[in-house]
Length: 251
Image (cartoon, rainbow, N blue to C red):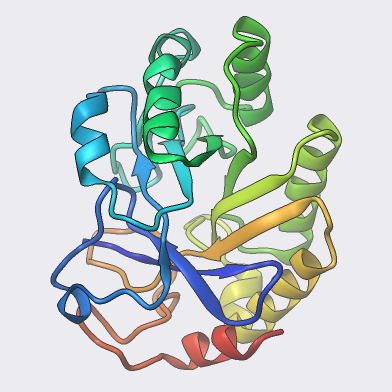
């Protein structure tokens, strides 16, 4: 299972993590979690009672529908692919989970989709999100979820700035960012630590960014992107890579 080691824009170091599901991997560290775990409802095919039973005590937030506008990524990996109509229909269940467990809700986490490299339900993530918000103005959430697989600092800053302009009244929760764009790895492959440092420095300066997280804690084989983008040496390892060491020491 891939995991995500994540940072909080109001605190230093790694303070939260998620694994794209509603329950943590109990094989990690014997089930002990000194770092805040954030559950996710990955797609619209879920049962409220099941999710309620899976979310561990102490959870504060609920992530929803990861990459709903994407069907398959650049390496053919299935994404949540949730049409706006399905998201609207499922939102009452999302709100029920949030109410049952006392959680703040992050909207579906969208990302740009390149039709030449990926299978897209909607190429423009802002279009998907606006359609969702317009179709269901009563579908309440606390943060707008976004994701980025950009490998260039300037492209990343442009992406986040576009979201900030499109949703000026919403705080952004960047579910994941990191270099997984296999067609454009220039900045990252030239100097991964510098890429990460520049991006994090930018995020820390953005008051509209509530939380952000690096992809990924460790990677199973089959994920796209340049090698060496994991923060840990591998599954079950507590040893930081050079990139991981840089990440946890950034302010």
